[in-house]
Image 1 (spheres, rainbow, N blue to C red):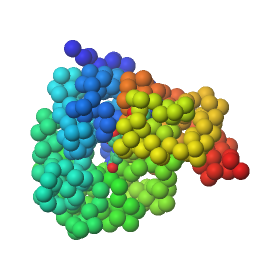
Image 2: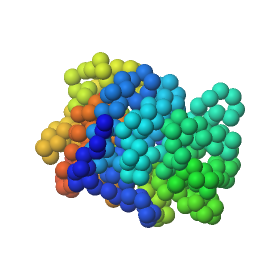
Image 3: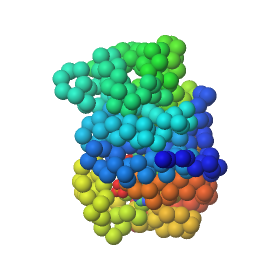
Amino acid sequence: MYIADDKRYEAMQYRRSGRSGLKLPAVSLGLWQNFGGVNNFENSRAMLRRAFDLGITHFDLANNYGPPYGSAEETFGQILKKDFLPYRDELIISTKAGWDMWPGPYGDLGSRKYMLASLDQSLNRMGLEYVDIFYHHRPDPETPMEESMGALDTAVRSGRALYAGISAYNAKQTAEALKILRDLGTPCLIHQPKYSMFVRDPEQGLLDVLEKEGVGAIVFSPLAQGLLSDRYLLGIPSDSRAARDFFLKKKDIGEATLAKVRALNEVALQRGQTLAKMAVAWVLRDPRVTSALVGTSKVSQVNDNVSALKNPKFSADELRQVDDILAGKHLA
Ligand SMILES: NC(=O)c1ccc[n+]([C@@H]2O[C@H](COP(=O)([O-])OP(=O)(O)OC[C@H]3O[C@@H](n4cnc5c(N)ncnc54)[C@H](OP(=O)(O)O)[C@@H]3O)[C@@H](O)[C@H]2O)c1
């Protein structure tokens, strides 16, 4: 029987999501990869236990995480039942709908029909009465935004979700969605954009909109799917995401990228950190970022990513070195 560590709230930091009442752990764990039906159940379980023992109170899912689709929610539901039910009120569990999930016109994108049916299916797979956050996973250019936001509002008003969120909306779409949600009386809690040293788009306006509107930001893939670590410095390990050559492609690990990774690794070592830890600390240097949403394939990575919080501060010189490396100046 699992009993959570008594000291689980001692080291983790909790950051407020925008101007809401909800705080999230500075490091959250996503179940996109490594928690599906194809993965080792006991390894998935060990990572979730370790995460909670380290104060990670937030687990992020989506309808189609797996593979196969839906299986990460099923795995999570089984682990919840075995280990975490006594701790349900200490957990923030999120899910999403917006990408392809089932065949036909009602299993994708942003209709009310799809989003609410999907949420019911997610609750069923996880054995939950409600999720804490329900997201629209991506904007749907063909559905009026009022309809997708209306589905989030219904999810909250019907008690299936406590808060509403959006993901992958750009700054302009975000401003529009936030207004619709506010007018409906269900303010948006949080946005989930992709953000890392390698993907800095949210700096071009999105984070400003979120700050102005008092909405949190939980940033996904802060390690650029593992590229921002020492994992690929000596080639592509057989147990790595890149070895599967699907979401992280082998062709994306070319010499120009590796040269930047090596240079960033030097900066991290000067700071007394691994590059993975520096990647987590780097996204959290911005106070507008509520949480770094990491993925892991082993318990040691959970430990590593949380220990990034021991060295969170960057000097102006370190930040400049990072910017120069990303701009390719170190090669000049
Ligand atoms: N909203 C969206 O559209 C969207 C899209 C993508 C992801 N997400 C969310 O964001 C979460 C995180 O995404 P992600 O998995 O791409 O994040 P990530 O943290 O950038 O990458 C995770 C991968 O990095 C490697 N890694 C992690 N910690 C490490 C460490 N300490 N040292 C060395 N390598 C390490 C592991 O790769 P190996 O597996 O090779 O060991 C791990 O699977 C997802 O689970 C999901 O919840 C959301």
